[in-house]
Length: 51
Image 1 (tube, helix red, strand yellow):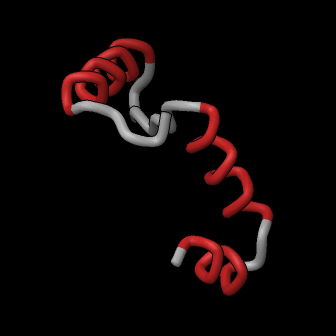
Image 2: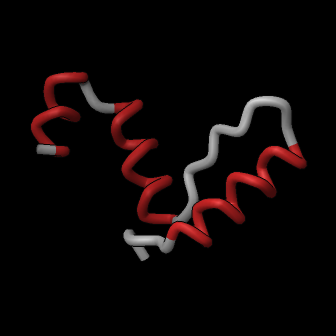
């Protein structure tokens, strides 16, 4: 699911804070896929795909 409720976001962030020092959280498979693709693609292509 691409849209999460504020409660879901807060719960995920709090769980990440309990597990690690710096909570960089990318919840959901679709979001994780977008982040991975953005890291692999050239910056110009990534920006075009996200617009």
